Amino acid sequence: MSRTPHAPDIPASAPGRRVRLLLCDDHAVVRAGLRALLSAEPDIEVVGEAATGEEALAVAAKQRPDVVLMDLSLGTGIDGIEATRRIVAEVPGTRVLVLTTYDTDADVTRAVQVGATGYLLKAERPEELFAAITAAAEGRAVLSAPAANRVMERVRKPHAALTERQLDILAQLARGLGNREIARALFISEATVKTHLARIYAKLGVDTRTGAVAAAKAQRLIP
Image 1 (tube, rainbow, N blue to C red):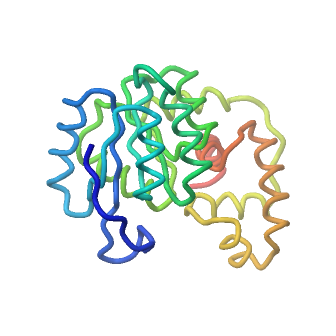
Image 2 (cartoon, one colour):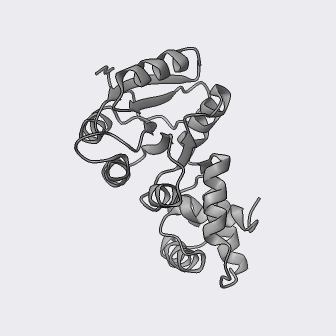
């Protein structure tokens, strides 16, 4: 397991700021291959590795990476879904980007519901992986084509119309803004943002910010 000193808390989107990445996969050869691939990308720095969900949680808590690249199947111990849920809940500011071979409805839905910022398949091209890592670090939802199709199928059903204000908030969510930033941008209170978010989730049938953005894009409610 490789570790580097914890870097200062500088936004991942800051000019010249490298995306700090943690790799989590139970196969050492996969981690080695990803590390070698990513080492050629100047905007990404691998700051640690983990072979289990528990190890990923511990390293993420210590290193505070911008993004965790998470496999779903991790052998013994907690799986990638539970690891994602706990990292999202316990390590604020760290995004989880799922990278796996599985694209079933259940896997995609569960990953999005527990807070994964993105979902990619291991068959993606390197440049797509690089772009997804950068987007995830900025808080933007990223879905591979098969995963996007799964989400689209899930949301292809009648839904209550969103208000203009709720569409405004969705647009800000798609930019990766937090509640406080959305409140400032729209000149409303954080409490109002939270109320609207709860209603948006209910109308779209989702439980997370990432899920709301994915569902809204699938229904072409936002660009």
